[in-house]
Image 1: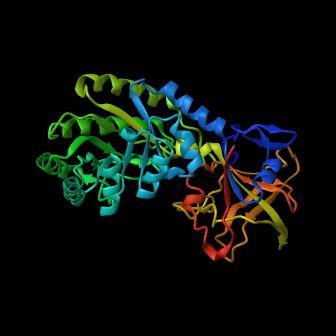
Image 2: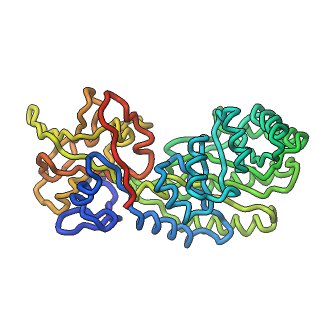
Image 3: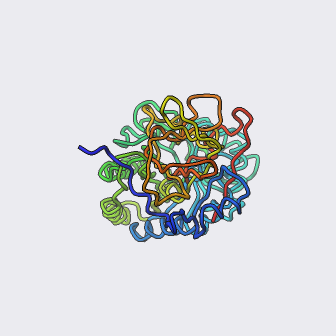
Length: 409
C-alpha cells in the first residue's frame, strides 16, 4: 500500500519551475519584500474562496470572517470588502475591524475573558457582544447606565454536544467557552430584566473539520438547540451564528472538504428558519477556511548540513514564526505540512531531508524527513496552508531573532 500523500497544492500556479504568488515569481517577490522569512497572502485566492462559498451558501445566510485566524490589517481590510461581517476576540482585534471599515452592525465580539474596559469599548462602538457568563451581563448593564447606551448582546452557548472529528473541540462537556445550555434560560431572564438589547445566539462546536457529515450534524443540532432556547428569549431572535468548523487539508492523506452536502444542509435550515425564526439572520463564521490556503510562509536556506547521512536544510525561519508548522500548536503527534522548494518546483531529483530553523531547540522543525528537491544555500523553502494561525499565533520574540514580514499580493 502506498504511503498517504499531501493534497495537491494546485491553488498556486508554477512557471518555469518557480512558484507564482499573486502572479509574481517567488524570488522576485522575496526581493520586493526585502527580507526572508515572510508570509505572503494571495488576493485572488482569497477572493475565489469567498466567491465559491457565496455560490454554495443560501442567499439569506451571512458569511462572517473570524479574524483570529489572521488579523493582518491589510488582509482584514481586504476581506471586509467581500464578507458580510467580522468576528473578533479582543479589543485589539475590534480596533482592526473598525479601522478596516467593517460595518459595525456586523461585528461581533466573543471570548471567555472579556475585561470591563473591553466591554466598554464594544458598547461604545455599538458592536454585538457574545456574552459568555452572568458576570458579563451584569457588567454590561452597569456600562449601559454609565454610557447611556443600549448594549447589543447575543448569548454564546456551550452546547451539550460536540463537533465530531474536529481538530479542536469548542463545545460539549465542561468548557471555558460560552454558557452551559442548561444555564441559558436563567441568563436570558436576567438579560430581559436588565433591558439589554438581546439579538440571538452564538454556537461554535468545533474547528478544523474535514467531514461534511459531521459539520451538517452540528449545524442541525445547533439550529434545534437555538430553536428551543428561543422560547426563553425576551424578544424574537434576530441573529443565529451556527459557527463554522470547515477545515483545510494540512497532512498526508487529508482531502479538501466537500461543500455540496453542507450547502444542501444550509439551504434546508435556511428554509426552516424562514418559518421558525422569521426575523433571524443565519450566520456562518469561518476563519481558517477563508484564508488558510491562500497563504504561504517562505524562508531561505542559509546552510545545508549532512549529519550521519541525513540532510538538514537550515533556514532563517522556524517555529518562532510558524509555530503551527513546527507541530507545537495543537498537534498530538507531529505531522508535516505540505512543504516545497519554491524555486525548484519542477525538479525531478529528490532527496530525503529535514527543514529546520536557526533556534537552539530540536523543536525548531518545519519539515521532518520529507522527499524534497535537492536544495542549496539561497533556495526558498515554502510552507503551504499558512494563511491562518501563522505569524500572530507564533512566539516571534523567542530567542531574539528578527520578526518575519507579511505581505498581501
